[in-house]
Each structure stands twice: as structure tokens, then as C-alpha cells.
Length: 468
Ligand SMILES: *Cc1c(COP(=O)(O)O)cnc(C)c1O
Image 1 (tube, rainbow, N blue to C red):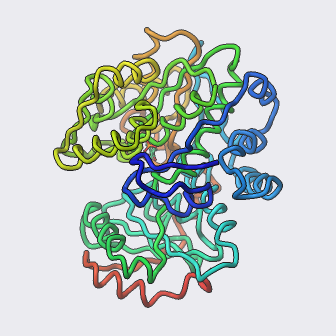
Image 2: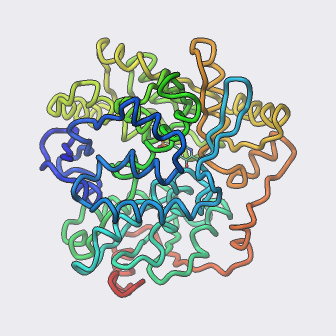
């Protein structure tokens, strides 16, 4: 399987290459040169498979010769046999045609575990016993940091340095990071905002000498392997609701457009997907882009669904490239214009093609809160604010869409207890398997928002190779 950059000017790489590279050298994102096919017969044969068995079949063509079949299957089973629910991603029925796909049964209670747990194992397999190991560096405002730490903790050949803004992440989110005691995990509380932490990470990646010295790597959602892992649950749920013989729609709470792009990949592979509902909060850049052809950056607003508080949806570039029939130079020109002006106009032809599958829906905070309350009243279920945005958007779309609609539950309600309590009067408790974080001791280092201080701190850490 060959991977090409959306900007057409980076080397073609195999699966191992794109997994370790993350971003392409021309600033673009890697995508497969062609989509592998899932025939109707192959889909029907998946109805009785476990999640891990389905995952092996769906992902196998993307991996190509980078791992041998038995090794890949072992790795996938190791990851998904260890989730907090035997179905891995169970479906729960909300009403006669509306289902919830629970993606929050991983170790940190957010859907990001599904892909990051696999990515950690892939890094381990690819780094093997070669070289001196890598340092994964990132900044987090919450979910991504803890999921990445849990994916890397204790694995040989890699260590992780995760920055968060001191005092500005919730206690649960902080403890999910700082109570991990593996020697290769380094939490840093930066005296500043999330943007300050993010700017430090960028500065270190842009310092070519330091980047090489540390063998810096990233695990953010531009990494192709993460998207690949997310294709699986679209297939797994759809075949349980009648696919390929009946099409299914999905409503996806969206920030960086990674999760919903994985749904598009499933459709491109042959899964009959009627609609992909792109649900946003007030930070609605992709909803505006899909409705009006206007992809333009605005100020980020802080909402009760913080993991969707994003004004630049990185993975949208992958959709633009696909809808432009893999035209790299045209995509590069569009993205260059966006980077210099903050605006990208999507032409009527591409907009019409996107409209055949995608429907953008913006959900405001009041509607989100009513949805949390209403779902609780009618079903007894507690849903988190991100999930509620998807459900509200699914209800808007239901009028113009036939057949079953699956809303993706991207976080466990206990990750956002204040918002859930405001809507329902009930404070969701942490599941027992992670409750211990509230009485464990924490470990982190506090640093000023200063690149030189951070570099000096990182140089003094134990080497990646020995750390685990
Ligand atoms: C990351 C995240 C999202 C957004 O997913 P994208 O792939 O960035 O679109 C939605 N909900 C939760 C809970 C998340 O953590």
C-alpha cells in the first residue's frame, strides 16, 4: 500500500513510513493512493465477528507489507481484548431508529483510546530494537494527552513529554495524566495557556537540530494510523444494523474532522453510508464550510465541549484532496491561500460532491444541555456534552434521512461531570476501574512558558531507550 501527500510534493511512503512520520515533509497529510475495497460479501461475513477480528480484516489492506499478517493480528487482539467492555464499542438503542455507539470504554474514557492504543503498539512494533528510541512531544487541553500517555506508558523505545496549561485542565483530566508512574512518562505543567503550550511544542519541532537530537515524534490526529483505526467501528456497527443490505447514517461530534473522515473512508471502501452528519458546537468552521462553501477561520470560543473547540480542522484537507480526485498541486494551492488569508472558498462542484454525503449541523450550548436532559429523561442514560451535540445534530438530520442513524458517543459522562450535573442534577461517578486516580499521588514538573527551559529539562531526562 502506497501513501501520497495531499500536497503532492512529499516522498511516497509505505504504512510504516507514514505511521512514524505523522505529517508529510511538504506540510500535507498522508492518504492511501487508492482505497481498498470491502465487497458486500466481505461485509456480510463480518456480522458474526468480534471487534478485534473485524479490525484485522478492515485494517489489513492499509498495513500492506509493513507487518506480517500473524504479527498484525496478534497486535490488534492485544489492544482490543483489553478494553472495558467485551463488545469494545457497544451499540445502545435510543429510539426506534436511533442508536448510540459507545466509543468510551478505553483506559481514559474517550474515543481517542481506540486509535491511540493501537498507535502505541504500532510504534513499539516498528521501532523494535533499532536505533535509540523516540521522544513523543505534545500539548493537550485534556483528552488527547491522557489517551496518548496511556498508549505509550511502559513501552520500550519511546518516551512521552506532555505539556498542559497549569491549573487549566480539569482535575480528572490532570490526574488521568499525572498519576501514571511509568518512567517514560513526563508531564509538564506550563505556566500559561493551552496556546502557550502549543506554541512551545511548535517551536521545538521547528528547531531542526533539537528535533533530530531528541528524535521528536507526534501522535496527533493527522497521523494516518489513527484514522485507519477509526474506520473499524463504522463497519462494526453498520453490519450489525443491516449493512450492506441497508444503508446506515452516522452523526459525529467533530473538531479536527478526523473521526468523521474515517466514516468517509469506510464509505469510500464500499460500506453503504447514507449520511455523515458533521456535528459542531459554536466553533462551526466545518459546518459553515459544508453549508456555504466558506472555510474561514474565526476566534475560538470556549464551550462545555472543549475537545471540539477548534477553528482549523486539520483533516478537512484530506477531504478536499479526495473530492479533487487526488490533485496535490490544487490542494497545496488551496491550503497556501488558507494559511495566508485565513479563508478558503470551496467551489460549487466540490461543494455539491461533499453535499451528497455530508451534512453540517451546528448545535449551540443551550440545545446541547437540553439534549443531555432529554436523553436522560427518556432513556435513563447519561451522555457527555460532545455526545449530546452529535445526538442533537442527528435529530436535525433525521427529517431528511431514511434508515438507522448512529450517533457516536465520544466521551464517558464522568469526564465532564459538571456539565452533566447542570443538565440532569446527577453527577456521574467515575467507573470503578479508573476511580483510583482520585487518591493516587501525582507526578509533574512545573515550567515557565519558555522554549530554552523546556529544552534544558528534556535534555536532562533519562534516554528513551532505557526509560521504560
Ligand atoms: C477529540 C474529540 C472529538 C473530536 O474528534 P475529531 O476527530 O477531532 O473530529 C469529539 N469528542 C471528544 C470527546 C473528543 O475527545
